[in-house]
Image 1 (cartoon, helix red, strand yellow):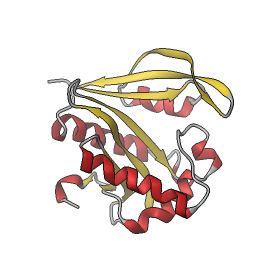
Image 2 (cartoon, one colour):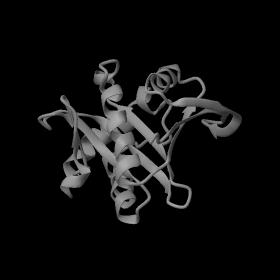
Image 3 (cartoon, helix red, strand yellow):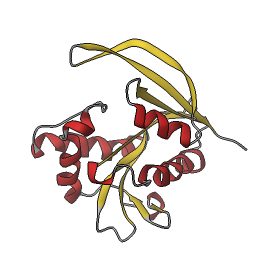
Image 4 (spheres, rainbow, N blue to C red):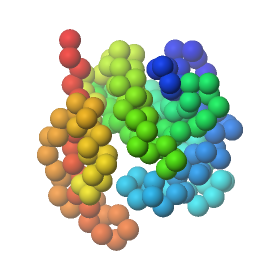
Length: 177
């Protein structure tokens, strides 16, 4: 873990994942309210190792960076957020985020997302950060607008989830000079 991959605000610490985070990641990615709009879920601690490896591989392979989002003193794990599917050629990446339900509606995402965007623009050299939000995920869509992401359109019935077609709203934030 390098110190350059740690970021903080006046109340949050964003840091690389450590092995002991697996229980918190499992708690989040097995919770029905969290995974309702999230792309992956796990039914065991053992299966969650796949996600922990994915987090580690992003940085190793240069395809992004995800962070454990914690209290400033690093005593409370709130959730996770970061950038993935990084394209060096096109200078863009996809942003993602989830929080444990106890921390919903407390402004954590609003505090953490600008840190992640700044990391993408300033450390990874990105020009564009994009987000794909399920069309019925109103809370996330409201948060994207609040964070100055521009709604670019909707891909209708573009994926199948739980046997049903879902539509995705596309959001973007462009680096401003």
